[in-house]
Length: 352
Ligand SMILES: Cc1cc2nc3c(=O)[nH]c(=O)nc-3n(C[C@H](O)[C@H](O)[C@H](O)COP(=O)(O)O)c2cc1C
Image (tube, rainbow, N blue to C red; front, side):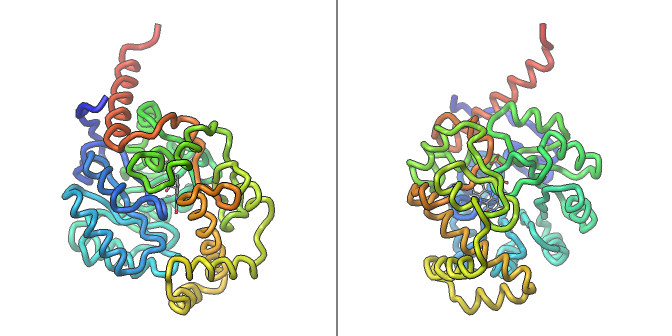
């Protein structure tokens, strides 16, 4: 099923000039240039995860995506993380078509992006944060429901999407629980203009996940996830594995979190003093959170890259229960659009 599909046009496809209302969300260590470029080249919107990248690496990643495709793509930044602001600046200097921001006020990003015609999309997981983002003047929202991998909200997409739709007329990208064309049509019916599929694209051929980890995703049922604050202090959904259970059984003590975050910084070759200065600049509470995030990256890398699921922790969504094979981005895109068109046609035919 690899033939080009006629597009499904929405407010989001028109706003960004993309063909399909399908997005690769920012996923640290997963949404790398090869995967981002593949999704954008196939007519969706790939979002580069800039977390963990130095400014030089961020600039190189943007160049790498542009070498793959001249179609629109985005750079994603969690503004509260060390180095994020510098990466956003690199992206703005490079005039990337779309910025995706989360965890912080982004007025300055909006101002600079709009000056060259760029668009800014904020990721939110509850109504309060959606209101703040709308008031700040963003061009669109990613609304992340409870089903999602990582930091989905308390409320499921089924309720959160129409609730946020009632707040604004902005294009909405639904994230959490969507892995195929049926989910796309359901999200459109709930008021979204596109879907972001993290778990599905993380299991594509172009994803950097270890082949055994991809097969593990395929083998897991929808309910085999854990939603816990003990991973990185924010409620976070991870795969139910030995490593996932061990890590989320109780909160890490601050000294262990600090030791592991230092270890993580050394592993990814980041200057410790720079990280510490950036973290402290956000205040003591955020500095502690940063240590927990740093500790979590060690566990994430073990699961993702080494398929070590006894010590590692794999971020994954409930939609893993809908992933039955490892195929290319082009194939996922073609299947999703074809299935969505079929579901729309079925709705129009009615049910007897
Ligand atoms: C392997 C993987 C890694 C992820 N990493 C991050 C991350 O670093 N930061 C983040 O905010 N969200 C992360 N996410 C969540 C996605 O951005 C997105 O919200 C989510 O995947 C949507 O739900 P779905 O998995 O049901 O498609 C990750 C998701 C996956 C599957």
